Image (cartoon, rainbow, N blue to C red; front, side, top):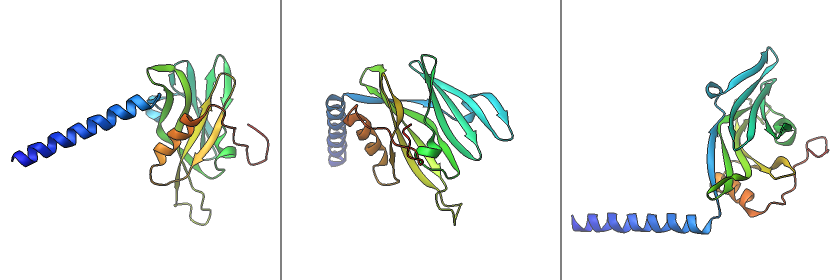
Length: 183
């Protein structure tokens, strides 16, 4: 019994030390908001699609748009809209969003947002539409620019990779859309 208790204490201490090191070393952290349809307000809807307003984060508004069985996000700030156009920067396939947005910001300063990460599931295999790829879309948010900067492919540690992309630098270039013009 003493061995089990000793093992549990050592394990608990190691976990606490790892958490403390991660918190001390990382100058960024995450907060989350919902984009689940049940938590959003429908602004417009017809047979062709819909626009839903979802929970904002520190003055950044969130609209989920859907059309032709594809979803994307428009962010708003200071009365300006930023259309992330996932269907032209990430995938033109049928798609759906995850249920939440991960907002990456400075530790203890949620108003200093670096960007957002959102799950994006796309039916990229046109021969097998039931096969879905689950990407993470990484978008930067700076004073002057809001745009998609990366699409993290499905893989082990996908979430950590997306966070590292946002944490690495503020000068990430925007992804270009499929037609080659910058978004």
